[in-house]
Image 1 (cartoon, rainbow, N blue to C red):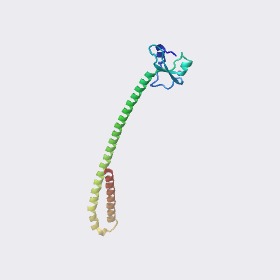
Image 2: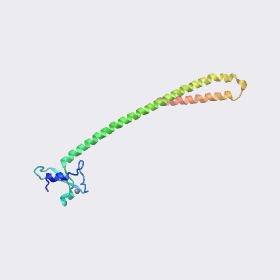
Image 3: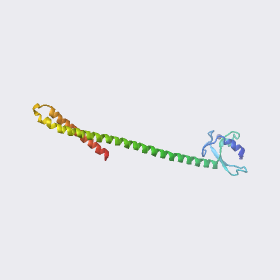
Image 4: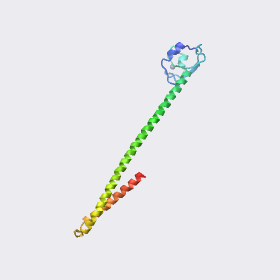
Length: 169
Ligand SMILES: [Zn+2]
């Protein structure tokens, strides 16, 4: 088996990335040692079919040492890409968390406002109810309904306060 640099150059027309596993024709590869003066004993990958029958055709040829360097560079590029991906994932996750924090903060603010409003309404209802009580000559459903309103408001306020405590602790 012999190989010279002028023919090897034309075989590298279709280059493969990294360490090749198969020729582009689908055949297996074998490794050989070059026998030329410039590349004595330098190993290369060669398509089995090209070696056995079709020496004139352009089948895979690749120096083993170049394939390894290629493979290492390739892995290094992948590692860099992976690091960049992790970095960008971290950034986007942080941004998402910040957006969620902001949203929760807005909800809590709204709840605080509602609790405050509800408390004021209840205070107003409580101060207004003695007027209703004093007015018992018009004994009807009105004083009772106002008591029910205050009870409902108290439950609503209690629920909101409970939710607020749950969310903030
Ligand atoms: Zn081949």
